Amino acid sequence: MKSKPRNYFGTDGVRGRANSSPMTAEEVLRLGMSAGNWFRREVGSSGRVVIGKDTRRSGYMIENALTAGLTAAGMNVLLLGPVPTPAVGLLTRSMRADLGVMISASHNPYYDNGLKFFGPDGFKPSDKVEAEIESGLSEPKNARAEGIGKAKRIDDGLGRYVEYAKTTFPKNLRLDGIRIVVDCANGACYRAAPEVLWELGAEVVPIGVSPNGYNINEGCGSTAPGKAASKVLETRADVGLCFDGDADRIKVIDETGNIMDGDQLLALFAENWKRRGRLSKNTVVASILSNMGMETYLKTRGIDVKRAPVGDRYVVEEMRNGGFNLGGEQSGHIIMLDFSTAGDGLIAGLQFLAMLVESGRSASELAATFDPVPQVVASVRFAKDADPLKDEEISSAISKAEKSIAGRGRLLVRNSGTEPLVRIMAEGSDEKEIRTMVDSLEKLIAEHK
Image: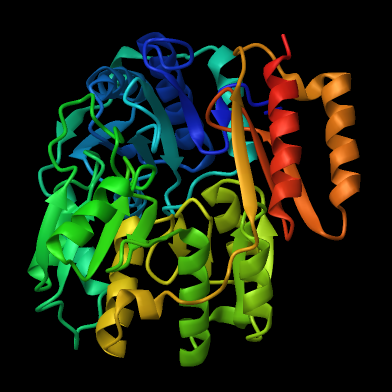
């Protein structure tokens, strides 16, 4: 079957505003039917699919539409309810399903939603597979009355994930006496994360654990960690863990309120794993957005850094192709293939806590790794059908700016794969210079009609 360009899929599945294209009930139904048909045909599927979701109100609509499309294609659907995205990857593989789908828009506001697909091995599919699923939207469905699948709720999906997450924490360690602020972003891990940490012995101070369908990521979680940082100081906690809406990202807060991003965590894990002899090929995989300071720091410690395009699934692809077991993104995706097939905020948090307990050091001492190179970022929203980066004046300005900073820093300007945004990132030793550069490009792109 000839693949067509991907119009629905971005860097992390399909995403958009709920009740607007492509996240309408009708289009989700068609995507479900096309995905079901593809997996049954190409994978020799027995027809089993697991579906998880986060806490958005629109998840009810999308879950029903997706189930209708999949059952129409002859798939038998197992509904997990609210679970973290990595739990869907885990359960797709452990329950011998042929397909997994997470209904989530990750760190986006409540009014967005999306679909993240997983193959039978628990990994997200390639661009080629996504393109073929899209091409199936225009094919005859050939649905038969006798080939309709069934759907049922699974009550122990979350419990399976909770128990698995605990097994990744060293058996000889406990969290007794450690006070942890846990910000679950009113999202998918609002039950799992506090439960796991409490059962491992921690004193848990939970926030962002009262989802109402509309408050996911709202002023909380990994995209807004200020609330958790204040709570750490208020309660004199030892550490804070902040997750995003579907819990595949994490930010860690030390006892002083300092916030550690994904680059700092990745450097910390890489150095620790190399020292223990468990870092495969002494290499980590980061994204093109990861800070230059991290790469410089790791190289002085004999650790190579490979870079992948933005998106945790591209990081995972690079890891699998190169035989590496640790990777991540500045945004807080930390991928540990020894434990999970996707970014898993909770498991990454547990590995940090294990290091904290084992070392006997404070979180601030543990996190003192590298000094980031000054980095300035900006985002410019544009009309859905527009593409400012194709404008000749804008592309010329970007090229000129890239040449001006070559050898002293980096400039990256790209379209977001999840929202109608142009994202601008510049880094270099002269913060004033890169800030002026970003401000100028931001203004120019914003004026584009």
